[in-house]
Length: 199
Image (cartoon, rainbow, N blue to C red; front, side):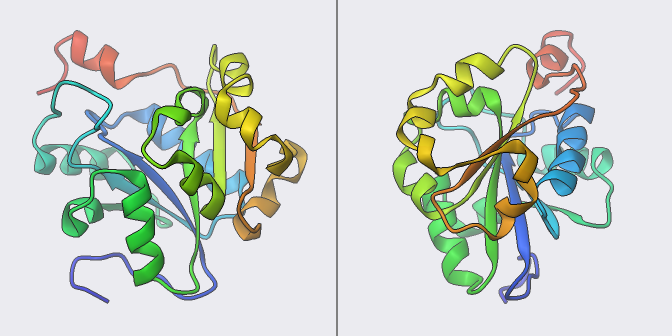
């Protein structure tokens, strides 16, 4: 394995939680712990991205965001990584293509909030992502109905795993997705930035 890349063994189930984490906060940590419990994951990797292509303004420096993420998310089964910067990818589909090639036999699950599912159809190659990688969707207050009514939910409706069977997601063949309701911590990166509590 390349230096600086997380280690994983064939057969492991790794949840991938991507984002700018600008900044990381307890809400991110909370849904990560919930994902570990709900989706049958061995570990979760936080993919701290170089930037979000859907956001017009760039984030704080990567080193600053990585340090904050490591301070917020301290868990033996969670790894904070800048793997997208190391791979030179900016879009999820390209990241997944490369990770699948680098880690043969590892089962990846893409984790997202319900707000992301609601706009998933705007992502580059979103159909490819859903067709090749199981999706674990964690519902946040106010996002449940828009997510369930989203174009992606309609297109992949037959691939949905019921919430009561969420533990099956990690080893399910794609396309597969599972929507679970979890108690949420009411924090957001944008609110932290707007209050001047960040870089």
